[in-house]
Image (cartoon, rainbow, N blue to C red; front, side):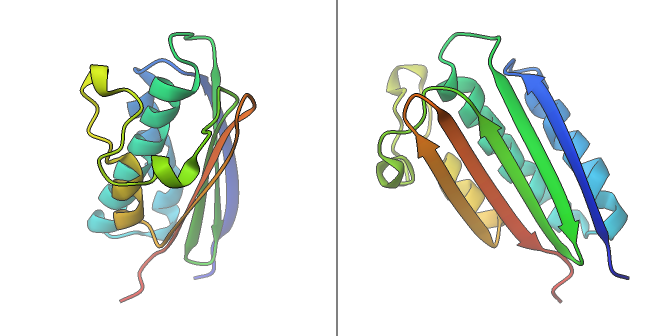
Length: 143
């Protein structure tokens, strides 16, 4: 079956909304009949991207907005997680395994590595002072 659909979700950057984001996207993509493994991988990648926005984008301001857009084109899922926070000054450095800009919070620095492990493609766009957009792409049921 050929699926085509889109959704957009917007919420404030409270840590309680991370699980909401995972469940909302999982419910939306369930129409493509993903495997349990695919669903877990996507939910984990979303969790990492949203957590990055919550922790890093707005610092301690819980009024910042996080936007998730999800589109289905055939069996390909594209998920965009976007914030309008402080941005990332060095994207390549931020993507290095074990790098964290918040070592005092005992962060593992594995967020982007986890996203890259579970998704087919991870694109990061960021402008300091304007925000960050993470684009996650995965084709389902490849087997």
